[in-house]
Length: 302
Image (cartoon, rainbow, N blue to C red; front, side):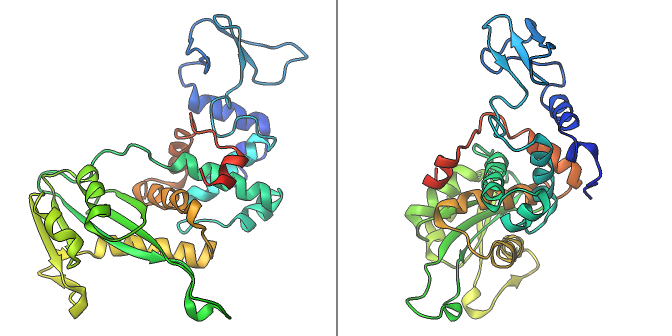
């Protein structure tokens, strides 16, 4: 539960002090040279609040330097509120909703949401599974429905490939095709070879399945979804149901170039589902360092 009356969401000074406590639990350090000891806070009347100086490299910095919030004109308390809202909303929150709740323009809310998603993305996750563990793999298609189109050809669907460890984490990917050439590199790098791989009957999994401790399948084409309680891909299907409800019901349209960030958002919330909303938001703040995203890069699809 998010307490919207918390001062960190309404007071910029309280928000800055909160972020300093999260990023600098052992005191401030210079983001330019990494200096810890030779750093002092500037308290002059002409200095903006929270400004520090590194006496080693002589650079000035605040707690937002080197993060997604760097050089933003949006008050820091609104950044923290937007982060909490995205982390607490199981199926996401649209930019229009953020724009109304934060009191910023739609364009600003859209950009803020993408910057936050960039912070939620996990770039080098460890492998899923392991000895005596099962990882499910499956693919789905997201995009508009042909029946909702007034004219023209059916909208192009984008392919999402996901790996879910039972009682564990999910790693999802935007892929160009469903074939062995595309899926094998993901499977062998993202799953421990000692794992038991569970898939449907698609031919793309036949050969790569032999590279794992075991490979089980269910035949969806004959409406077989569970066999013997162990053979199923219901865990990954459950993740897809949350993803599709968010994309179809909340975001309604997700462009091809930004799909990877939306997947990062849904992966993060799923992977941190066992903790509270506040704890999830605190964890999200740990991912803002070194991921600065400019408006130009966002529009370029970087």
